[in-house]
Image 1 (spheres, rainbow over the protein chains, first blue to last red):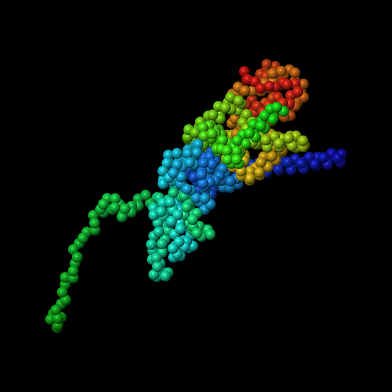
Image 2: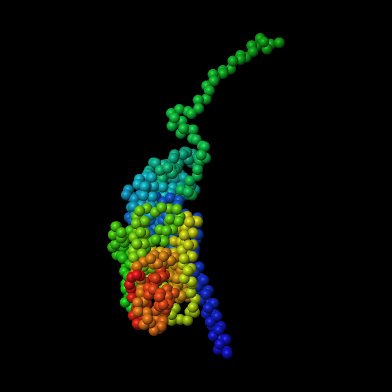
Length: 254
Length: 258
């Protein structure tokens, strides 16, 4: 009798442990990446030709990663956010060299990387943003400009804008400015930033870009397009000179 | 043991071919089991992940489609779940766990054989509603195979989970795997089947039931002798050939479904 009770307890305990462990395994397997199926706020830069529906089209086979000659592309690791096994790159580690033949796109079997993208200059993987203006050496008044010089689209995607240095009162600041229409997001600037942590970083365009109201028109651009002002130039009224004359002294005199 | 050894050989050879690239620089195959390119001519695509991209609203380009058609065609010929028992790396993990399970008193806990189809439906709904191939965040089949090929050591935790799962529940992951569920649908059509041709000699030793990963498929062809077909017609049979290996009466052999 005593033995039976003991073995019952044993069985129960074993069953309890077994079912607990089973549940734990199940949870571990189902929640493998520990995240929701969407990007979940992960800031990931995707290979050339990936659009916003990328995670719906990518089969996470890794062929683009293998095709990348510079090992720029990596797979999102296990237990990381943003779709485990899908490709991304970290420019501060290895930037995109923008191969003219786009081997990553050629390797993609599904078209998740758009095969119609053939011009490297039209790549839009992200956009560089000078996020830390407080620590950027050029903003501090130094003549660093390494990001500017490393940009493959120098003077188009990245320019140095001259500004008066009001701190010293007599020098010029050369402020790096990104032009998103030319920036591919290759990340050469982020890679080359001399600070221990880059002041300029590539961000997904959806995160970095604002949008002007649809109805906004930049007057100077419209004018340049048309060759003249869209509305008649301001009325040029005749300048009125003071017409009155001072009263003569005679009149003032009583 | 013949088919067991052949299967292990097949599983290990496929893994080796994938690993030759990253380990030895011999790139016979690019990619992973989710999608691969062999010798730059033969595309292969995992049909489940391809199906998910349909459900997300993406129309995959020709390479992936061709790869899917080739894979589906192949398994339609040799038996749908041949993938499970001859290719999938999880089979080795699960068989190892099952081996331990048989030698311990783990009780009779198992998950039903229809759960895999519910899960398959869930995978489709997940892709349709979220617009991403969300199952691939959890799919152990592709996670394990890809992580092995890309040498992500963290996969050890997944393998351990699967191993524990296989020890605690009869059939383990392979009982509920939606990849297997999809392939099993092909298995209902494929011509290559295990036949219990001389089932009248069966002495009810139970050896086949003990080793079969899906013993429910054996019942009708083996026991309901009256008028029933001596072919294991169920698509859930993985054509692993373990029953052929263990039957001391040589009841089973591979043959055609007709």
